Length: 232
Image 1 (tube, one colour):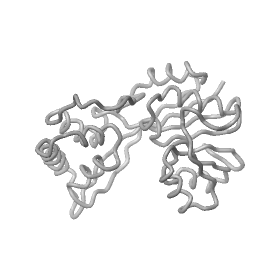
Image 2: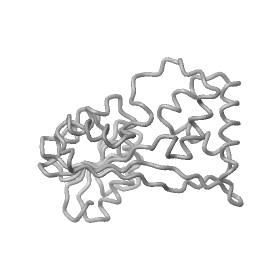
Image 3: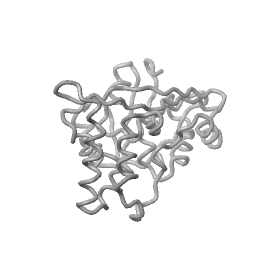
Image 4: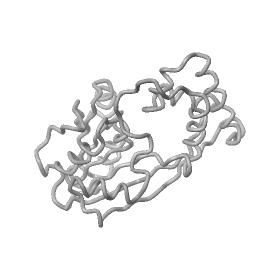
């Protein structure tokens, strides 16, 4: 939990929603993102919060600077997640907490299963993607605990919960477009497919969405792991 007066760092802050929520709780947030474009968007939306450009692998802050470090799906966007976790640990005060989210895998996550099945059935996966984390990073509690212990966190403090939210889509093709334009690993795969293959993937995703049709929209369950761990 984030409470009044806590110095809070929002890593891979994107448009700044997590920082804004922290401020509403009375915390003192700072947001950082690798993308200048995202920093500009966040600053435009929340001008009373400081946002800056920077790298999650090399945070430009002194050791022990923050009470909380937050990363909302940000670990999926970095090439070396464990290094980013180590940096989160470094900039936390002793006893400070690191909280982050990652998507649950297809066996627990209906939304992920639709895309995973479509890509596995139709895509060419040997497309020379740049280095990056696995799509379902830290998908198991023990794997997650061990990785966080290696970089200085107290593994016994780990809280690991899986939560499902409903994502409302205006039409069946919206999910495909979201993955192509805003996804991470899947977007990289889709960008490297032939037009024919891309069409087959799109049709498969739209077919998978049909069971989630609710009137004039599609309501898709999406599951994520919510992880909180304390620094020693």
